[in-house]
Amino acid sequence: IIGGEYTKPGEYPWMAALLHKSSPRRPFCGGSLISPVHVLTAAHCVNKFQHDPSSILIRIGEHDFVSEFETDHRDFHIQKIFVHPDYEEINSGSLNDLAIIKLNSSHEIGQTTVCLAEKPGDFQNCEAVVIGWGMNNPESGTQPPILKQVLVNVYSQEMCQSLYGNITNTHLCAGNQNGEKDSCQGDSGGPLLVGLEGKWVQVGIVSYGYSCALPQHPGVYANVSSHLPWIASQLQPHTLNGF
Ligand code: 4AZ
Image (cartoon, rainbow, N blue to C red):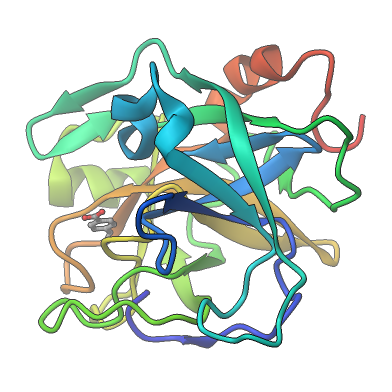
């Protein structure tokens, strides 16, 4: 996350961190818990682990990767990874960049889940928040140990299309006119959120962008509401948004 600030412990209890078992001290991607046993993330984060997820771990509820005092997080192995069937890397971007990870959990965890946006197109020009442990400085490439958040504006589809091309209604773009605030490498798979009626609603999944926090180059997100039917179909017998 470029710009913004550190989150507080417990502020985003359903935030997921994707870890390599061989180097679990920093996550390589983010995700979000959308049912007691399902994590939503980006396809490009997990595509190569689809047939052998045994080398990665999912951590729910982490805040600070270096603190020895925070013990609220829980680690899960993966039962199965479902990559969107129409996921595709296109010239300097991607289409349908989402995947669902089914956790290997014998008992359902009593963790709150994040709600997903149901209505498409409602969020253009809204203020949103993106969170993650990704790079906070594209030059130095440093990844902070503490979960960060930053406010960004959701762009209109027309504006984003004019800046990037290849933008469809399955994408959302969000950033800051002057740059300075953005998601970046390592934040992929994490949630773009809007506050609605006192709760967080996930509207996007960190997917790609031209570098990070450059003026005229907002971050590009997979549009959650446009993928809701596929997401819901993968969750059964679990359901979305507590219904
Ligand atoms: C990346 O490399 C990446 N500014 C993620 C998000 C953005 C750019 C790059 C959005 O994973």
